Each structure stands twice: as structure tokens, then as C-alpha cells.
Length: 207
Length: 114
Image 1 (tube, each protein chain N blue to C red):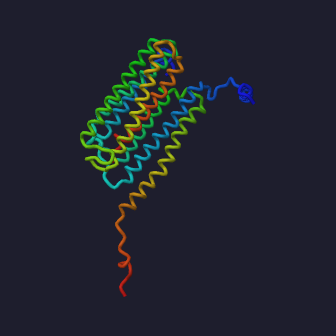
Image 2 (tube, chains in turn cyan, yellow):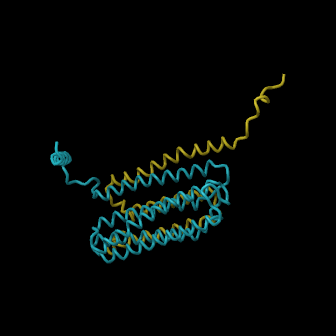
Image 3 (cartoon, each protein chain N blue to C red):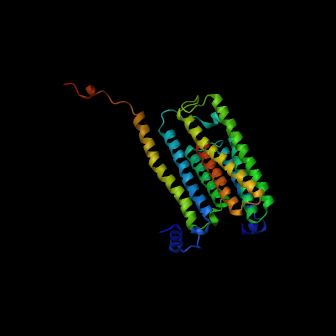
């Protein structure tokens, strides 16, 4: 069977015209990607839980290691950037391109500020003696879990920034449809969602 | 809520943002109130779940998606995570109990003198 006949056969078999879940394929695929990515973080957080519960040494009290007001500032930045992202998505859907672009730029600034804070936090902790296999505060696994969890999250923030910069440029040029902004927004909100879990489970949970 | 959404389509994001901030401050302040550890942990986990639901529902618009999509996303992630935790928690305790248990006496001392 040649390619054209095969394509016709496939289309006839499905029928076409009805989107799964009533969503565009881009949005559906982003949701499926988010599920797989959430399971990655679920595995990482489970590994962290195991190390913290099974380890012999005392887990460091995070308030002795981190400046919690600084971590709260990072959380504030990320939550605020998510609000701007939601505004950009709705503005794009309503056809207000200028508002969408402005809010995308604000979101990018928020994401860049978060990454800057994370770079400062990492350099500060490394200066204090935190390493992947050791640290001055307690259980040796603490450093590995900190760098892995925040590192994976930070790499997602960085990827999100790249996606947002491309989306903002294309929105400015009038080349991104509303659903493109929405799909980029889904990814950005997911990054915020993951931080909610890391913030609570790693930074706040008491010994 | 619908009246707010009708008059201002961006209002839901500002309201969600404000609630998320209030919850975050409450979570940070919680450790300064001398409450039992189990209650503090429960408090933090409950508010973490509320924050996650608000981000998923309002920012990601999951509550406006097709019901099956919502079940697939929320159910898939939550159930898998719970299974992982349900398996890992007892195993971690088991490993810790075995490694912290006092060493067994040497075999010779196990026999009573005749």
C-alpha cells in the first residue's frame, strides 16, 4: 500500500473531526508530558523521603542551613510570575496582544530573578561547604538531595524561560496563536507546582 | 466567583495569587507556634495540597478541562505518588530498624555452659 492510500485508510478508520478530551493535540500532548515529568519529580521526592527516613545521621534543620525568608522570596517570585503567565494566557485568548506580550515579559523577568536567587543560594551553600557527598550540618545525603532536587527544578525553570522567550518573540510578531501561549503557560505553571512540593517537603518539613 | 470572572477575566489569577501568598506565609509562620510535630506536618501537607490544587485548577485551568482529562492528570500523578510513598515509607523504616539494631551476640555465647 502506498503512503497516500495508507493515510486515507487511517483517516477513514478514525473518522476524524473529534479531538480527544476536547482539546487541541498540542495541549493534550503538553498534559501528557506534564504527567511524565511530574512522575520524574515524584520519583526524586520519594528517593529524598527514603534517604531522610532510612539514614542513620540526623537530618539538618533547614532553618540552620538556609535563610527561610530568602526561600520565601523565591516562592513569592515564582507565584507572582505564574499570575502574570495566567494573565498573558487570558489576554492572548481575548486577542489583547499587547497585554499578553507585556505579561510574558514580566513572567520572563520573574523566572530570571528566580534563577538568579537559586544561583546565589547554590554558591552560598557551596562556599559554606555543601557538596554532593558531604556537608557540615548533618546527614551526608542532605547535599545530594538538595542539589538534585533544586538542580532538576532549576533546569526546568531554565527550559521554561527559553520557551517563554521564543513565545514572547513570536507573540510580538503576531505569529503565536492563543493556544501556543496557553501551552507555554501550562509548562510554566507546572514549574511553579513542582516548587510548591519542594518548598514544603524539603525546606519546611520538620525533623 | 462567576461574577468576578465575568467583570474581570484576570481577577481569578489575582485572587489565586493572593491566597497562595497568604498560605505560604502561614506555612512559614507555623513553626513559630509550638504545636505537636504530627500536627505541624499535617498542617504543612494539607496546605501544600491546597496550593497544588489551586495552581492546577485556577492557573492551569484543569477544572475547566474535560472531566476525563482531569482524572487522567490528577489521578495519575496522585495515585502513582501515593503508591511510591506507601512502598517506600515502611521499607525505609525497616532498613533503619535493621541498621540501628544492636549487634547479635557472638554464636559461642548463645550456648549455655554445661
